[in-house]
Image (cartoon, rainbow, N blue to C red; front, side, top):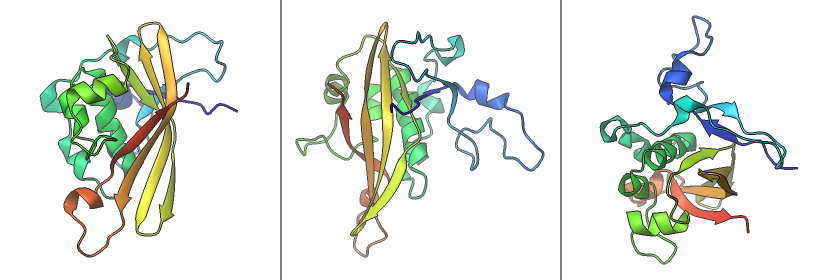
Length: 184
């Protein structure tokens, strides 16, 4: 059964969520207990989908929270950063969520655009993911949905971080994108 994918909404949508006094402010999409997403993409592949008008790419470069790139605990922060950067057309900033491309060289804006199929417009969202530990590393895998105009592309994204191992470099300890596998 296809997982439900969530469409990332602008922080303004998060500000309007119903909250109890002890609930963190959802105006900050990275606050603990807040969800990164709002509207839901239909389960059925035949269902029509139209993103909310407020989900249009509008994030200015200064608004990107680059501290998410140093995140050790919440992989969703990296996904939120990645979606904000790509949805705003800031491919060079989005490439910072990778340590390297699959060929081992640094990820660049051009390589990243090619990985995403050189979209003219991009609206990126993620579904809920699963974290698993392995010997020395943790992995976080989540469904990914890319909408480019009237076409959609689905797949899985994998983030990785080295568990707190002596001698690990700072970038290894932070969550970073390991790979994306698109469905054919």
